[in-house]
Image (cartoon, rainbow, N blue to C red; front, top):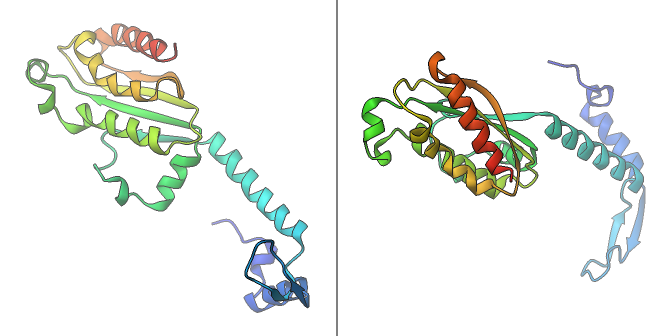
Length: 204
């Protein structure tokens, strides 16, 4: 764990003494316009100090969320309701500019002929839920990277591309890129071509 800054290493009592020195005594009359407050008995810390601290906080947060990529893995997290997500997770989604959606496909012979509603949630419902989450909460989102782990053996691109349809929710709002594609060897080229064509269509 990184050491604390020198100021935060001081005892809290000493830090409060510093703050007390900054907050000079003396009333301020009618400190706010259109307010029921008629006076405050102590002056606030220097405005320039508060503005500087706020600007530094905003700049660091903006830089970090412009640099970081949030990864969503289809098999990496349980299904959950929006209200059950932590405040920190929602804050990250609202601030971040880049996310990676790591899709997991396993189109078996049985699934290829079955009703898509019977497919596992991580294949059929996960993309839609994540796309809706990003549409609703990703206020600063600019880029969505679509990656794929495909264990399908006997399935064509025409049968599997339907799984990407929920990404249409974000069309026109973000830019899409193809990420890492890993499939069985004999179909990797065709899957990659299909994915690249589909992603291109989302960007036009």
